[in-house]
Image (cartoon, rainbow, N blue to C red; front, side, top):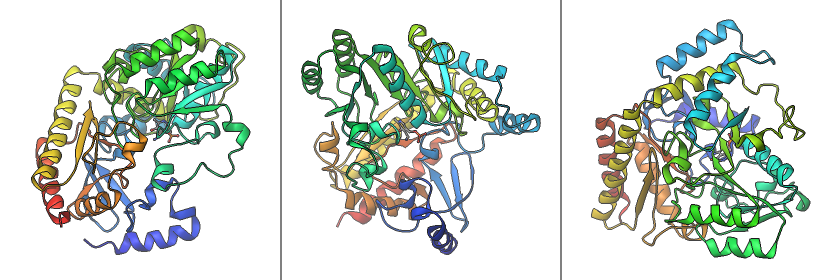
Length: 429
Ligand code: PMP
């Protein structure tokens, strides 16, 4: 595979942008090699500037549930662009998307749109602190909630890939109210609540973790957290930026039937454009300015291009047959990968929920960040490159999840599994 154009583009970018990128994991630091510079996408495919074609399982890190350049989404964006791209004044589009979100996500009664997942989680904890008049939050090791200061403690995603300590520049005072526990460990959370009686505003969790690799909550774990929050008067916040409209149309809360007080959304809700949201019970959301006193704002919040992309996307995936198919395709991939690894005697596991999935080069059960970090990242790197060479684009890190879109046909899935079989065989020795 020729990468001359990507290599040259990367050289140029490195002189202009820190690490040559605008978000760390894109730089391939976790796996080595040259990041592919993208020319365009179409359906399930990505095309780089050397003309190589890849079946894409990153899908812009989750948003593109309909695949790249889905015609109805593109048409809606173009039509809206003709009418103006931003007004800084309300439009009916915001209410239209809000109605779709509220109808889809069971615990959400009212919603505020923002432009990134980071803003959504940052605002949700501000709101929880305002509502409860408490200061501490509980987060989980290996969970990533964007790059706002209070969350950069034991964070997953790029922080985990680069093996960074908690980021310099984040003041101790910004994280001194952030308590952490191991994912899937209910007793640890119970202990935190007991040692901080009456002080915990909220517990924030990725209900299915996708930023330490893909890790499912154990049976009853989320319900246990719900109970602990109720017992201790803290709000339960599900960060569904990744899982929302992904593991099910109603998100992880619908999938596991556990209702949070606040929900953070992003990725799919903006249909590939910059939109995110936080929402929840009306009584809590009414504290957000200007209805209430908790301040949060945004020049491009509720951006009309992002709203129409979100509206069209949610309407398309609301059709019941869509999730049925997505779930089936994702199962086939997981089973195919697992079988192919087993055949080649490679310690491996693959898991999924809805159209989100992931795998570890690890024989023992992965259930938290510590067990995830035992995975063989060197072997992952070899596998990643062997897949890339065969035209399959996976996230360039062991500590990320994978996604499927409606454009991933059975043929493409079969092709991907064949590639995995060849990749496992090639890295075996
Ligand atoms: N929360 C979760 C669960 C995420 O996966 C991400 C991004 N991958 C974020 C928050 C931050 O979103 P953004 O990158 O849009 O700021």
